[in-house]
Length: 195
Image (cartoon, rainbow, N blue to C red; front, top):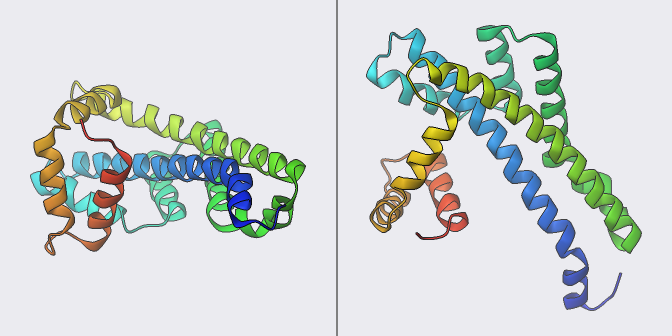
């Protein structure tokens, strides 16, 4: 690895890009589980209007392990589904908690960086598989209401107008909105380009 800071940055850019992609997939998996558990809670509360919002608030505060434990209590997943979830959890934890510590020595050489990217891609794929399975379960619940994950996403993208973006900016500074949600809104606004 070079001693020139600009060169080091260029050499590490592909690793950091892959890490960003992996972290995004990890967040998608967690978000899917929050939405799934909130949908189940809404249904269990006889579709009480505030139940969904309260569940989102509750489950957004939980760790991935806690979310998976709660999901297993609610739906008793088949063994194969449980394997996907366990693999997703394990790989997500490696990406989030162990990646840098486990690979820092590999980042100093081109070969090591390529191997590191390969490890990240594999871990990301395992998390993505778990997210796909969770989305399929969510789809089963949404179909009861004539919806699907794809339809919900389409609607969200249609709602993404300059006006909605401005409303999100306002929410991101509103102290009545929980700190965690304000952070998520700010993150969303930096990732999703204006319409």
